[in-house]
Image (cartoon, rainbow, N blue to C red; front, side, top):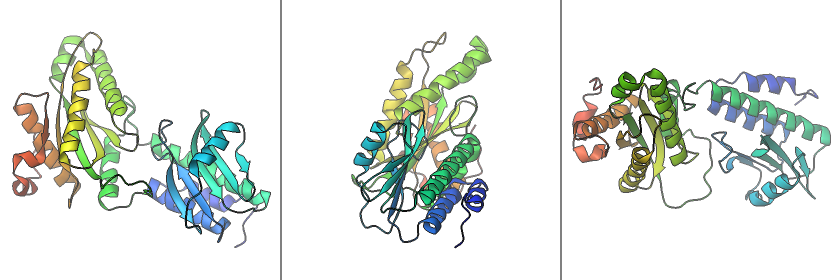
Length: 317
């Protein structure tokens, strides 16, 4: 393939991608075109969080990935270099605020002009990834917004996620939890909407701090939040959610002092429509609020799985 020195066509094609999955597929294609039959391994912090460990994004022409910890250690030592030279490899580093956000290992020597071109396109890819991320963020809470929720559920349930899992600690399942701040209208009525917004922001921060970086936390609407997270089983999920509930209940909110949240959750398993999944979690949340608030309810506890699938049009709130 005849490739221009600046890779203009590849750069434009990356900037035209409008979904993360399409962008991941495009960068894999670009790397395959630029580095045919050359061993490569690309790592990324998927949620673009500086707290997150790097995960394998793509692996090509090599049976085993390189030593990631060695590559990270070298990148941390050579803080000002984007391209690291090894005896028989190159490593291109993506950085943000001095944090390492991604690595591309190239398993054999290539012309430096090609290496610089690949480095440029990796940066174009990462810039576009950040642009897409900003479009799905709620401006008040900095959580994922409601418009992103359906796409993430479909991505998870159809198995189109991009991360190649290398470390297994038993099979983990995806769950959806819906969170609702108890008596939030009272907060707005007694303290005003400015304090109400501060409460939303602080609850959002508690949720972000108490879930893993690879989980997905959303502002679902108003005072309601949603989290897509992984757990080995329902009991473990219940314990995790009860820990989060306790953290919020013990937090001292300015002026308001203390408030609580109610939580309903369900397993992402053989769900035909996003609306069915949300309805199940909504029913569990409704049960939690109806029976005292400040509690966690698993949809399975309700024993109405068959009924719920037939009632997805019911509005509870």
